[in-house]
Image 1 (cartoon, rainbow, N blue to C red):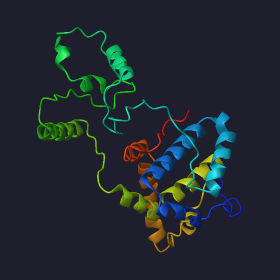
Image 2 (cartoon, rainbow, N blue to C red):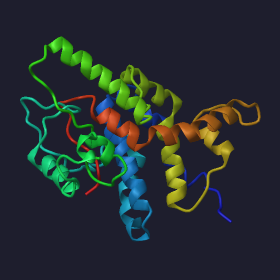
Image 3 (cartoon, rainbow, N blue to C red):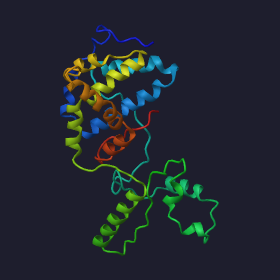
Image 4 (cartoon, one colour):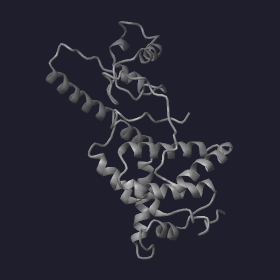
Length: 251
């Protein structure tokens, strides 16, 4: 039976240490989310236990700091490419050619959109949409056509990527205490312990469990934290600034 964390074991936690999230940018949030996803990935393998303990100890003292997890991303043409729209690279084209090397030109498959064939394949470009742009059209026509295609593709892939003001969204995540909750639960899992709901409510200042306010807040926090600390929101936040440093898969 898993035992509960003692007050002494949780003495490291202070909600005030998370005040920096009040003014954290979307790019800081992207790194914060990715660091925690990376730690969770490493935690799955017992041989990484000491490494994860060391890294998480840094967050225990300063939860807003970056742990430096990063990934190698495709190089961009700095004069043209943006975080979400880029010209087709040679490396990217080679991956495509390998995927479709056995498809005969002129066959029935040759008329199908590249993306429909890639969608169910495990490869680095399956999440991308590949377009052919006719520059002979006017800017207004091209932009109008792109909006129509984007709407159709979103519907076809059931992609519910949210829009809106993410500066306000991340502030809402701060107020909801998403990261503090994640860190407490991660600490408990890392040490093979549990944290009583009443203790969680007290540490996160959610209100009384017996009176219902704390109980309702915890009921909301568990699924909301899983939604926010996710690859989905990491990639959304990562693309919001073209000047941002690249972050991503742990090396």
